Image (cartoon, rainbow, N blue to C red; front, side, top):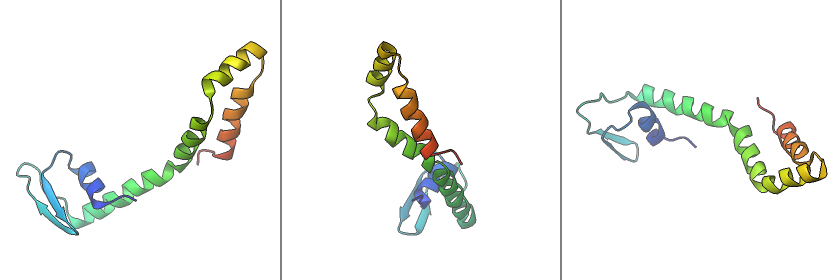
Length: 97
């Protein structure tokens, strides 16, 4: 879940601030404090980006379970397509939106 902290870091990188619960104390003299609406909009935007990448996170988790180097080596030695087939199956099961 995307938080106000994520939004602050995205909108105002390297800014100085303190957040106690929902109370933001702006400590940065060189950057302007974002409004509540700006923060809310950024949380929504970042959550949309995160949600839009669920397929990529799922694919990566599945790819990590494969012993890809050994699969590629065995495919080359045996003239098979086990690795390509496995990758294609993962992509088919978790397509890009």
